[in-house]
Length: 92
Image (cartoon, rainbow, N blue to C red; front, side):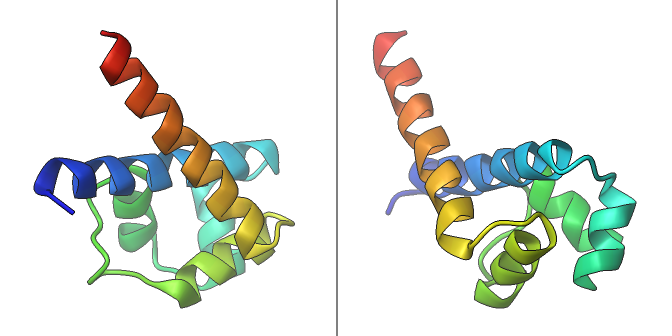
């Protein structure tokens, strides 16, 4: 995976987290409280600046559970956002 692909994956995961958090009617502070993920890391995730070295499966599962989803559902939203971004780039 090249640098641009990694950046796209991270950016889209952050977008997915924002989308599910807002759909669940939660603030970032509420999601932080429910997951135990500190605000600095959660902000980095949502803004696409966190890396796989900063968070992993544990955080993905906590975010999914807190927003009423299974991890596979959260990752499905993530994958859809990646595909949408690729189509947008290819069509530009």
